[in-house]
Image 1 (cartoon, rainbow, N blue to C red):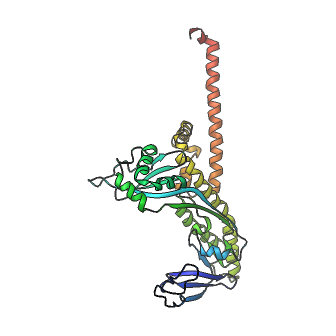
Image 2: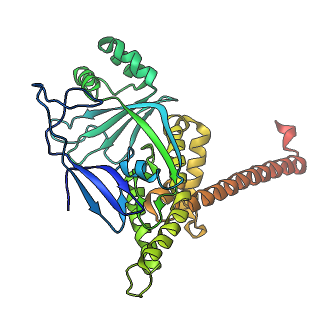
Image 3: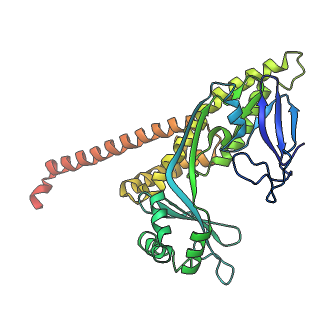
Length: 358
């Protein structure tokens, strides 16, 4: 096993990869072609090693070096989007009695239409909070944070400061915690022949608004090895193992691509739901109806989208179709029910002459 090595090249036809050892001294004279240390002495090039492999699994994040080299061999369709939202982390301390300041059994959201502030409970009785907002808002606040930050929070997130976060801590955390971008990546295929496959954010980085990034990555592993098992890769069958692996990877890409693309889309859509829709009376009515049917008539198999995404193993692409079907049924039932009540009211008026007493 090799740790602290950086992938610098790969030949996925010959199944050889090259890695640079990261524990060598850094070259610091300039970024593009560093050759000297700070004293002006020539530095040796970091040691590079070649490694032969049977199957290269790249789980190296959104800015994946594996994906970069994969795209030299496979005809990879690639889509990258930075949404116009940055994020900054804040922290709500526990009380003096080491207890939660607010209810720890809920995700707390301060919605503000196109942006929001959220608080998630931690095991030490604190809350990890995040401000999600357009880059223009961050730039405006950063131009004069001493006055604009408190004004911004008081206007859009009442009750956060000074009640939950002191003005000093609020300013300190805004100025010292990074303001980071959010990226969404889709690509396909995820593999090349029997040589390489990418998993997790390397294959489908997503925004965090459904909390499914790590779950989807771990599910990649399960689905990948399901296909390797189904195609007999680990069975001593005497067949060409390389061909079995290639067939399994073909099936994995075909199976996983629509699911990964769907959860990317759902994560983006959930941002609008969290930051804006939750304030709509119609949204609240729909959620009440969905959850009531799910709880009181479970034999219908009715489950909310959040339940299906977060607590079940149903494929993301399949659950989207089910949720859309449920939505059509819910709207149809509501329309029929409303029409039925109106018809009964009209019948009562005509039969009993109720209108004469109004």
